[in-house]
Image (tube, rainbow over all chains, first blue to last red; front, side, top):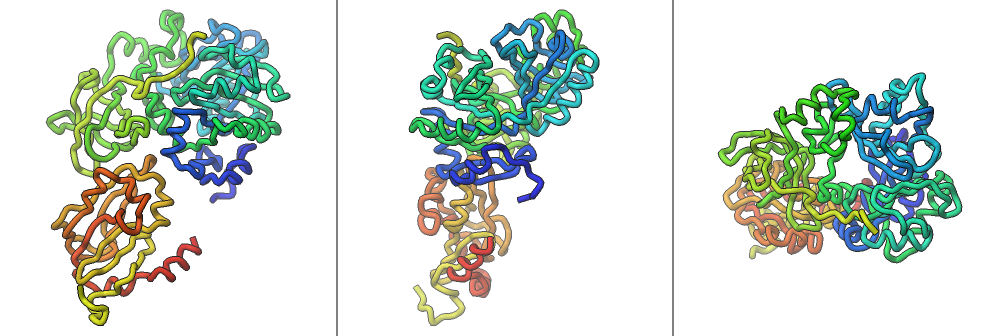
Length: 369
Length: 134
């Protein structure tokens, strides 16, 4: 393994737990533990899975009105983000392509709290700093770890340690004292399950990790199951389903373009995104159930029923909760209606597939208590 | 069943490649699979594409594809010859590769065109010594 890979504060805990470590986003990360991807996936759907997502970037945007400056390069409505709430958004280039997808919260009075993808963070911070220049500042929180506790038993597990957690709903975010340290807690995640993301100081990470794992309902879960869980949840992955050529409208992320932002059109790439919102789209995201044969992996060609290639799979694999392969890809809008029969060309052989609605597996976000 | 005295028919014990395939020879037919080590490394197998009878393969060519939750991996032909049977049971029960990698989880039976290839493969002791270097 390359010596220049970074380690998260939980590296030693992963190795001690028997994790298989792989390079990911510049870090040495656990792809799976002893149980393997399939069991870890199903455990998270039935109980609670604990993920180390400390490779992701955490930052504070501070200033008189950092949301106003930030909105120049993101499509979500962050000026209208209420205290205690979090919202998904995308960082845009001038062509309306996605530089990264990110979560932004207002957990307290200390500006905005932003979580970005690990592989993108250096570039993101550079762009954000340039955008905010003279108006607000971006401060990387390098001394913090991020844990995700996901699954139907996550709420009960966390409430045993942090009673405030029980009173939160999906996308609530608060800064509070938890596990004896300053923590930022949000009821969200990227598995489709109910659950929480927990930001804590790096030097407390292993203690918090072990405290949660001491509960028999909790098991550590690696990147392998994280990927299959988010795919079943129909959640796009940056660098695969999303990149600088893909717009949020093509990707089906219309909700990431705030209503007030659509009217103002005052963000990078608004020209293209406005046209696409009006229906001018050459390709859109399609969600496929593969009806026969092998999983259709990233790069697999998508064809119409007569065999003409019309698009490509950007994420695909076997869905452990469903027992058959599923895929996310892009194709012209004429082929995107639910129920459309398509083909996927796996190793030269055409296999039947069908456009289905997402999420592939129903999500279990707790929107009301 | 030929006797082991017939040296042209290859060894009767399991032999291994550096790509973690195994063969076991009965008569002039080699049964082929992947080692327990390979199955462990792959993780949970969810799909296997086995070759059909009649496919002619050369040593080192792609013979089958085995898919875990995460990835597809090629299985290379450890010996040259003609496939006389693919293990159809793996279509319905791909998890057999994990449960019984060196017996019921076999991939194909190949009629040997060059039995000497088998002699050049590692026996179990040599394979285990090889694994210890990985």
